[in-house]
Image (cartoon, rainbow over all chains, first blue to last red; front, side, top):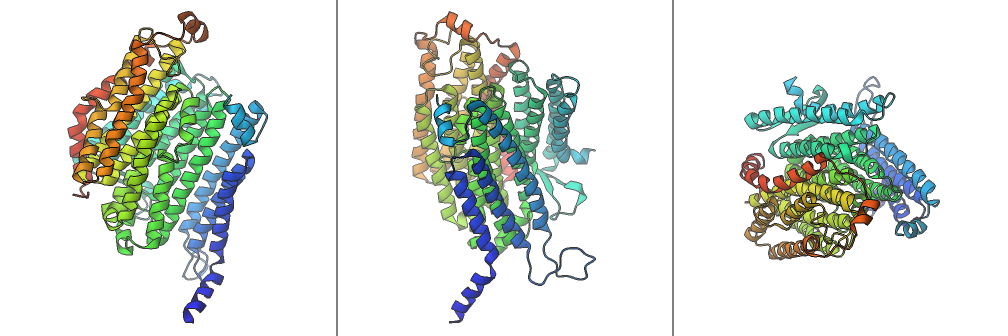
Length: 124
Length: 491
């Protein structure tokens, strides 16, 4: 029975990873399934947020201090994933900006944001 | 100064890329000279680095002076040097083409230099997260360049490219997370040593491999993740499609090879045969499906794009077989394909400008109307099929010999079949060009097109055709270079 208890412990203590999986799933589903271009971009953002949360969760250590040296001794949480994600957020913002700029142009040319309508106009 | 060469290779184009934007305050035609100056500087740096690599073997550089393996490392060895030289040469060729063909705006040249930055960075970096950043810089610049086409469809193609490309890069980033969790490091050399200690069959390592390689195959555009590619190539301006088709997938395939040999190493491929077979299977399907789709196209540029799907399948198969001869073949085909495909897109652009023909049917009888472009197109197409003595023959031949030596018979069959299919779609075009009655009347073409072609544009296409044959002479040098830099291959 100890095995069961352990797994239950795993299930209740790793809830961050549920959030990661949920965000990745919801994001990817929106990205593929939503016919609205803006919602696709939102889905893309949610997908990336899932990845960010995954990295931040990696850095966590139970009972550790923030990685600021003046705050007393270690152990510290790993600062590296935070820095990586800071960079990845910048990349994500740039991508969103470019995507939205393209959507503005598509809307002014075709007058629609619906993927299916666009498909018909596009292949004419 | 001389010890900072690797980082200058990335810094020079990024600074050069900012200058046209500032210059826009005064004039909108300053982009071209600035880009030429920057790329001349880039080429000089590559030359100086080549000298260093030739004498020292591998040049390593710690960015910002942070101690390795904690800081970001830039590594230039024989393989990355060849790819950087390719980037430099093709960029200069595209600039010669774009001087007349356009786009002429400063913003185009800013994005152009940003793309060079991203591609160079991807090639010289020795850090898996840094590779992600450069992958996204490359992506962002490429999306912008595709959207610079005048037609409204260019924006749709660019958005499609952006969404699929971002998913690919994000999967790669997720894979980096798993690899970081498994090893605690981001430096490629350090990670490769630690992966061996963690154990290649660990779930974390396997997931990292799947996600990182899966993400990069989106960027390489292997079937079935290639869907962004035909639209992006066919809707962008000719200069852009020549540039992107020659370099973006090429450098992504190089990054995949770097991951296979420098991070996971061939020991991983032998320890986890399932991973190796999966990659060989995806690439083989890509070879056949890409060729079959290319045969079905009526638009020439879309046909060339689907042909890339197939050729990159071939390159990845060569890398994954991982015997010395197959890897030499894959590298030769990687470089050869870049020159030939860039040249084919440039030639198709000229043919469209001179005659208005952009479909297989429209090419009928155009051989006499644009003799130089059509001649170069035919030479490049035959090179792509693999007619000796073109470089396309050597690459395919080495990959084939590698597959036979490794006794992977399905791959042998696929490579031979794909050569036949490649012949099928290019021979059809050659036949139309020279032996069919024109379907487009000359007056109609002049009234419809009327866009002029410069000597520079023709020169670029002719040089590409000459290189497609002449590069064969450089194969022994590549072979020697690779034997020195990648000694750890499946024997």
